[in-house]
Length: 319
Image 1 (cartoon, rainbow, N blue to C red):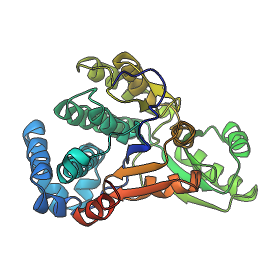
Image 2 (image 1 turned 180 degrees about the vertical axis):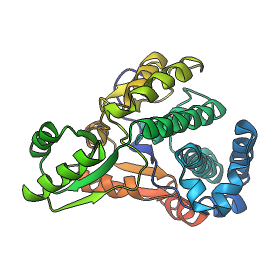
Image 3 (image 1 turned 45 degrees about the horizontal axis):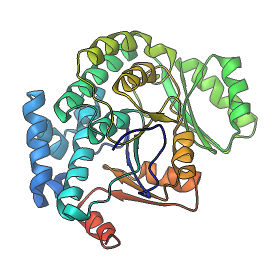
């Protein structure tokens, strides 16, 4: 497929991939047991990284899986296993996506599916990304919080007052802020006072998608430049701009800037819907993106493929 900057009108599907926070011990084990294609993914994961990450994914311990260095390649592994098991099950009936997209870490998974990078290179990149983010979090401690039910412009004023930053615009009523711990706590208090329905501190190790990740961005630049990038086979809807990436070089720039910039997930979904996508399929261990997509655009369908049963169920509607 030639990427033109527009989504193809011949497919109504988009494939999407979750980010960090969706991990849990035991994820992907049902697929490993049921699918040869999925087993191959986990075997390739261990071989590429030189560690038994699959054992950690299936058996824990949970605190070790939670470590950013492990959780990022682990989520990618399960997401790719879901995608390949889906393709194995459907064979020639597998629908070609009009576009792919991923939330933060999930954007890297989308690059593998779009043919921009190999799976082995994707694993190594996200493991290094996790290491760099972990170190930046130690050197520049911070936190994140979700703010529910507060208008974006109101929250922008709060950010200006407190020094925190918008990290994820997930939907109209869910925006994540990021920054120094004291500043995030103050911003949460102000958000509540100004009408937020709820504020939720996130269980993360640092201030991701903020300027506190600056040193990680420097290291990631070197890692990204060392990997071969191809032009995408299908449009990749970017986190930073919410619009299609058309070349491998555009993808490189996106990945490097993404660590310190806001994830525009709402805009990405709306771009795809406006371009004709009506069926979103989330490949991975959680239903986070599917739930967000349904809140962003109530008229679309969004399903999660995480195990053999969900693959079987969704495949029944494909002819």
